[in-house]
Image 1 (tube, rainbow, N blue to C red):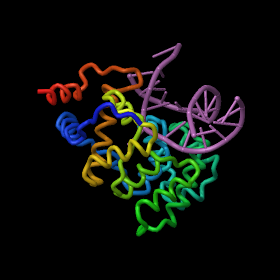
Image 2 (cartoon, protein in one colour; image 1 turned 30 degrees about the horizontal axis):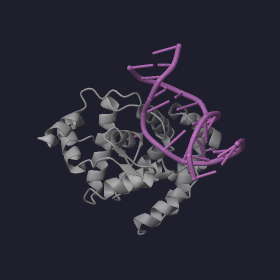
Image 3 (cartoon, chains in turn yellow, red, orange; image 1 turned 90 degrees about the vertical axis):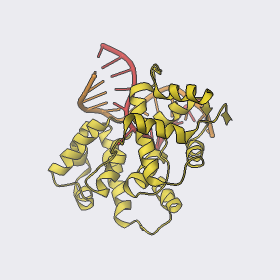
Length: 212
DNA sequence: AGCCAGGACTGAG
DNA sequence: CTCAGTCATGGC
């Protein structure tokens, strides 16, 4: 753990929001659709996920009973466009088993533990479900978030360290966590991919203004 | 024609 | 425990 300097996350959020506006992330028709989307989008372009969800909806399978009733191979063919379709077919069934009988009154920490025990559900997928489907205040860390931090001198080791970094510096507000994460991805698509192309990145302006 | 996308699991060392 | 390999389609 080696923090060179601290980003002002509130300033960063405000700047991104003023620049890009609300992102309307995960406007899924139902809570369950968001849960499935969280699995389907693992390392996958969202456009491909929409095709897979569209196929499920067309077959009337976009509900827990439908997913459990469908054969794994048939399910796999329907979600083909989202890639990794064999593993994702199993993961959809696994997350659905959890979804049908989880206790909504459970504390966020316990729910997270449950989710992480499901095969195919890692920290980002678990947190996406908690935040975007269930409205719990957990900050979602993804590749874009880490890249943004690293390019501004914040180098942490693990997922949990990054999460604590954000949650510790922002008010505990699910709606803002939601919007902030979406804005970071929006920023990343334009300026913060694997191959650095930071020219014109709005966050550069932030640095300059802070120095005055 | 590569490179990349809103990751997670497995097995080797 | 770290980490390369694996899973796979579609858009640009």
